[in-house]
Length: 291
Image (cartoon, rainbow, N blue to C red):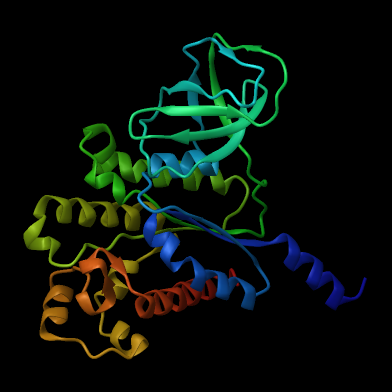
């Protein structure tokens, strides 16, 4: 096999993936462009509004544990059943995903108050009196894959203290990274930025974000990609070709997202900022020899 053909075949196998919530979703198209430029297949695992524990369940790093109150999965594929997830809580923003429950393939969805399972094809009634892992449909991770994790920021706004605990959010990233690292060494965790003026409008939330990022840096070392420090730096203005306002510079000095880099009043990055961020991430991956 000649080198050109071998390189092409290898490029069809390797993937560049990003998993997370709305920030991961919004930067996704620009990460996809980078993936294509380096002959990687792009996998977009971002979902608006999703909690981190839902994201890592979709990823397969910590599967949902499910009990079926009716103790049976009905034969009819048109009949959905309510299920109890014992290691998580329902949220409508969860991205529905397919997988296998007690040997039955189907789709798991969530409303604000409950989870629902619907089998893919009609079959036979399946007795299901125990607790089962829901194993998601996901291609096995390979050693050539790159995985970016940007998870858990939405958890901070949850009312449930089991979800919004800052150390539990760090643990989600650790769980996902450790699980992925059995297959690939190319796993990075992205830090969270504080929203516009969060230092004064949401000081408790701001402090939690700072704590999480500090822990990320300590735990993940060079595989922590310091997104917030980049967004709070002078470099971002050069990269985006935006002239900062006094309010922008003030927010940067307080380690919050400048509004000139934001959409929807400072909660997410605008397209110019996402393009610059994607290029920043590309540089980080190049420096590690991943691409």
